[in-house]
Length: 352
Image (tube, rainbow, N blue to C red; front, top):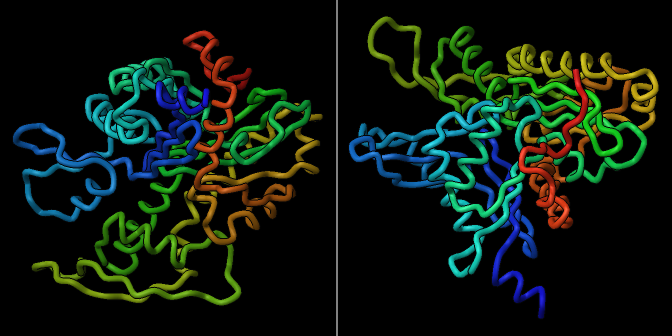
């Protein structure tokens, strides 16, 4: 009965504010929202027309009056005003309309976030209707969500490959010992495919088609049997008007296209390992590397990382939801969490 009354009064909310998607966890309910981080605005009036999936669908509209914005770039808020509207919509939908008190909110942010970025995220969440806000570093939340023993005196490595950033961290005793926040993730992979299609096939495609190619035939390591896919776009080979054209590409080509962003991820992992104290780095041989985030689903990525580091690499539990699940687990101790200083960044440690 007490829990029911408490949930009627207020919900604690955990948010994975991603470049591509925003996920929301609510106490007592789990993950209640998984929406694209898009906002559609009427260019004439400046009013919000749609948020989330509906806004993303409007990207294909040719009406000049509709402007679709992604307010989160490289894992941080790039447009505070639009972000306020997006968060307000998501928080309202997640918490319901009948709560007596505003929710307390825990938001996951990139480990490389600046002081200005921290202030922007907090102000945006408070403006969107939060009663209190705390921030947690994404790789720490991801490790918690993947059920890694982050509080133990051991070392665990998490590599969270999101849309805008790749978060690499080694965690021990509840802190990030060393890590890298690299502006290179799923978006960079899509951009690499777009550039490849223009250069090699003289075909102009958009981000949604590039993402489709990545998901359906993309790989980081040679596949036993090559995959093929027919792609439609605009012909760039003619000097005159661009006309629709279809080409067939294979997984070997796309692996070549993805080589640059994938190799950057591998280098970030190697650099992080190299910066570890010897005893902590040595334990990684036994504990391995855990992958999370949408980019971790790229075929053959774990095999490539293992080959380049000598450390066993595996896909973590619910990789697409590891960060938001981590915020939910951290909120189970909400009293201690919100009792911390306002400026504390959960998971923060001494890093180079």
